[in-house]
Image 1: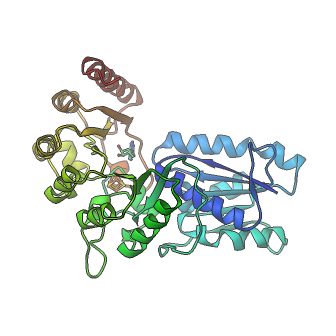
Image 2: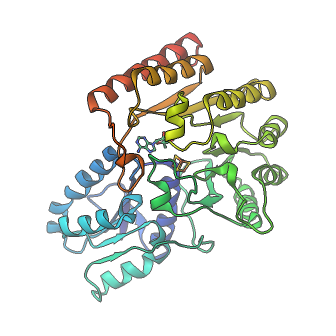
Length: 377
Ligand code: 5AD
Ligand code: SF4
């Protein structure tokens, strides 16, 4: 019996797929090479932009034929996209050959859903819990070479007005520090992993919800104290929560990679305010200055969204000038995509696709020019 997992979206999803692989291997499945030879296919989906969702619909739709040839094939769709009740329902109705549709919080129960479908107790199912506790018991089947992803928290409390993540991943919940340290000790002991990458939507607010609370800097220091030959990196950082103590820790701890991904999203203060980012262009630049002062060799990358509702040409040029001023090692630039239920999707002044396209191309061209000039690519 073989499984095949198709993962869309971010590193968090890649790591979730390692958990799904662990669950399937516990059930006796082995990792297959392609969809054609699989007895169970899992789509771990992403909802961050419309384009990501369209790709999922296309991929799932293409399985209709395979299911006809092999009616015992089990098809599972899970992840951020199907955590939205309306999309999950649509998925179930439009693709009657999909067996299991579940949300992000249902993964711990995947084994029991599969058993029910196999035993024909329940033909098809749709399960969407609202929130889930962090699961410490399920095994991961790791597949990222010598890099091990380690989740330190789930969810996000920020509600940036364009972003669907808080709706599909729930509120911030940090893992207990001891559980994280034990996991990393075990990973290092295997001798297989040279790089530990800590994952969270907003790692800098790690531990605020624990009692007693623990700072992200303290977590980093304790991980660095683990004996062994490994490096540590982390993502993603929110500029509003990146403390001086974290910058100092990056500066002094040899094990921490000198790299920060610090999404700015826009270089314009009115747009940043509308995005609910809680920092200004000036405070963002101040953080960059501090990083460069304390960690001179630090690589810095960023994310930007162009064409946020009401963004004028002049405001877009403020994003261009921020990129010019910081000279990032690299940036990701995205066209704003309205997401269901988010505040920005309901705003007046949505920008046309044509203008968004023009702006994203200009920003990416600027990034390329800077990289060439600085010899970064
Ligand atoms: N439209 C476009 N880009 C988005 N991102 C998040 N939500 C949206 C959206 N609705 C981008 C942000 C974030 C990255 C992971 O995806 O730049 O940092
Ligand atoms: Fe989305 Fe903002 Fe949370 Fe990042 S910090 S996941 S952009 S709401």
